[in-house]
Length: 136
Picture 1 (cartoon, helix red, strand yellow):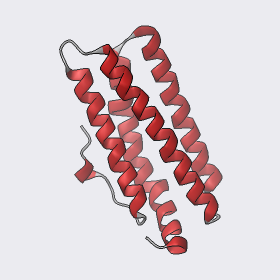
Picture 2 (cartoon, helix red, strand yellow):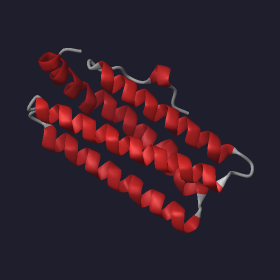
Picture 3 (cartoon, helix red, strand yellow):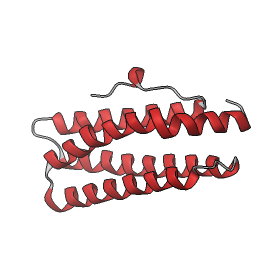
Picture 4 (spheres, helix red, strand yellow):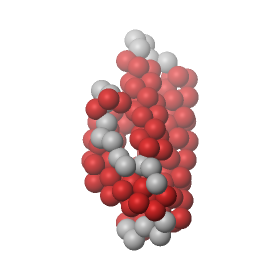
């Protein structure tokens, strides 16, 4: 499982805080899925929280990018949209099938790997640009 302490840090403090909150929700999801038997309502709740948090996370980042006229905003925003659509598709699949393995595979493997890569690439560059224009 991904740990907050192992997250890459970026130059804009607010982004680090949001990334840590995302990891806490992923840990909460893992805990819910690891219960034997797992509790459907708890997984529902955490997925709902995770989806809402991610939507807010991306919207805030995009607002910051817009405020500072970040040149690569459209590319970064496109990646956010792609991931958000994937998340919604997996949550919808969960709601229809209650298959914990699909949720586990996507959120605890695919999304976690993507988050680490996204932070070290797009978010690092974005945060540096924002910090130059707004201060850390």
